[in-house]
Amino acid sequence: MFALRLATRAKHFAQSLPSAATIKLIHIQNVLHKNKTDDLLNVDIRGESLQFPYVWLRENCQCEQCYHTTAKSRILDWSKFDVNVKPKDVSNHQNYLQVTWDDGHTSQYNLNWLKLRGFTPEHQKYYTDTIYKPKKITWHGDEFHKIFSKHDYNEILNSDEALYNWLHQFSVYGVALIQNTPDSETSVDAIVNKIGFTKRTHYGVKFVVRNVPNTSNVAYLSSNLQLHTDLPYYEYCPGTNLLHCLVQTKSLGGENLLSDCHYTARYMEKHHPEQYKLLTDTEIEWRDVGVEDGNEFFKLYREPVIRLDRHGEITRINFSIPQRGSQFPGPIETVKPWYEAHRNFLALNHKFAARFKTKAGDILCFDNIRLLHGRNAYEDSENNVRQLIGAYVDWDEIYSRLRCLKVKLKNEDGIC
Ligand SMILES: [Zn+2]
Image (cartoon, rainbow, N blue to C red):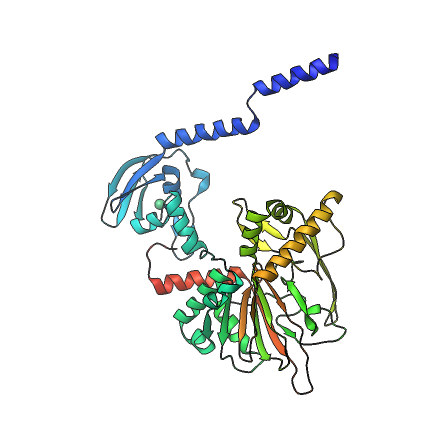
């Protein structure tokens, strides 16, 4: 009885105190309130009023003492930096803003440069979707013929516009095709060189896909290849896969299946929210063990099927039935519900998948951390042996090339 009363009193006491979340919110509001009144500069940029924090402006001074022009890097000495810096004098010019600070230092800011770094949600979204990474557009297999862009091998090699268009379409939809590729095992190298370099894995700098009995990888079999992502057992998983078709099978089958998991995941979030939560929360152990070219490997990596960032945006999909380990790192009661969610995710990806059969000279490019890909069974014959050459390229290199090309081609002020 006594213990019960104590527990009840303790409960009342706890209820009368603000929760940790409330305290945090009050604290943030105080900080924001103070910032709003004291530390922001209003700048009129061609009729648009934007606010910039003093501390941010001072730290991002573009003068030679604060910013190294060729290294494009901040060199301002932070040991002497004052976060409470205030402007003494501000003047607006046609193309730039000039601020003289209370320590006597003078800064100038190009207005286009400033505008691109505006702090409103609209300005920040614009920068994110155009400079940071082109905004992705999800698709259903029925729309594949509309979103599947085709590009010419030689045009990509000889024109920056063609290179930009290919990489832009590829990043938006996660899939694109290069046609008219010369019939050589090294043809894909020239395309990779236009971007940067490949991601080497334990399957090599490049890899050959053809039917190999007693193989180190199920992709090297001619039987049905279930929908999957490549190498989910890598913490630094290759972002894209470029598959050059040298010889396509003349038999039935050999078709690729491609499914946009961002579409499937959003569908699951809406229609099967509990299963979506299981796929985003439950860590799975991905695994690859074997020998390739005499080198032993034993790769393990843990991550859910759908990895989200703190905004709830999908950053990576991991999915491979052969390369999911038997070790299940989660609680025992989640096992069966997780399998049900897994079954549904696979079934939906099949339902939403596009089907496409490449031909010799095609390079099928797809986002390996967004799409699932698979292949129907096929049969080789004596004079027709299906053969593909594959190369992995990371999104870091593709986004980097896209931004460099944007600066070069679009001639926009203030990007970098
Ligand atoms: Zn400066």
